[in-house]
Image (cartoon, rainbow over all chains, first blue to last red; front, side, top):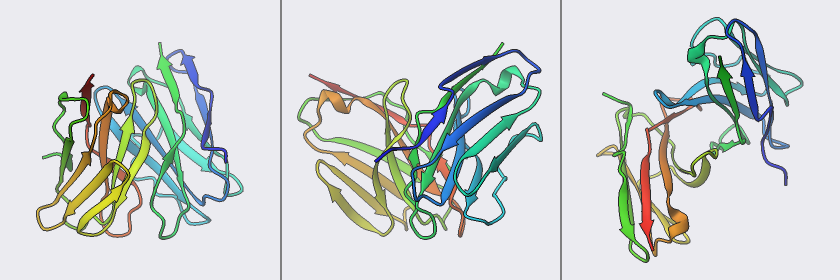
Length: 114
Length: 112
C-alpha cells in the first residue's frame, strides 16, 4: 500500500515569508507526527495528533509554528515569518495509533530559508 | 546529558561480520524502543521495535533490551555493504507519550 506522502519535496523561501508543508498519512493510521531534522539538532519532535484528541504541541519551537489536521487525515504544518534557522528537513510520520507505536516516515520536505 | 545517546561512529566492519550498535537512554519510564535506518539523503526507515527485556530477532537483525541498565542494542549479522547507513535509536519518553526521542545516530560502514 501507499506510504506516507509529503509535499513539496523541496521548498526554497525568503526570510520572513510563510510556508505550508503537507502530509498525507498511511490510510487507516490515526496518529500523525511532525519532526524536523537539521545538522545541528538531529531529529526532533514537533507535534503529534491522535484521532480527535487535542494535539501534543510540546515540541513546537516557537509560536511561528502551527499545525492542523483536517478530517483526521491530511495535516498541514505552517511556519510563519520564516527564519534561516528554520532551514531543515521536515518529516511526517504516522502510526496506527492507540497501542500500536511503530511510526513510519514520509520522504520529508527540505526547507531552505534564504 | 542527552536523553538518548549513541556513538556517532563511523563503525567500520568487514562484509559478513556482525555489526553491534549500542544506545543508552536516560528516562527510566521509557516504554518503547525502535531502531531506524537512514540512508544519506533519505528519511528514516523502521527496522526493529522492542518493548520488553530480552532479544527480538527479525532476519539478520536482533534487537536487545535491558531496561535495568537502560540499554538497547542492535546486532546485524552477515553485514552487507547495503547495510551501510546511519542507524538511529529512538525511544518514547514518559508515560503515555507517543513522540519519539532520537539519538544522534551511529554511522555504519560495511567494507566489501
